[in-house]
Length: 138
Image (cartoon, rainbow, N blue to C red):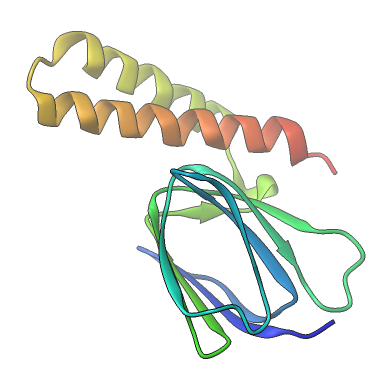
């Protein structure tokens, strides 16, 4: 299978950099797949499951990703995201606490900006928990 260059950058680190056969990203319109020689494009990313097919690996790699953008240009894919984590990196206690704190913010805040911020925090925390529980021990 043909490959493309993949760069996944988060606010704090380079999450993944290397060759990739395919990637599936979560977007507002649904899950979107990218393979080698894909047409140039940009897409928004929402919190969800990221699936990578890495050359030479039998299983797909799964990660939790938060909001961001994917840019495809000349067989090169760049993903810029607030955060991305492999299931084994996710701390369940921390994610559960973040969800609880965001839910409290949502109950107490009334401005639309604060509500949107709290909803985004909840989505990220719940996604992290779902990925950890579904793929963490594999």
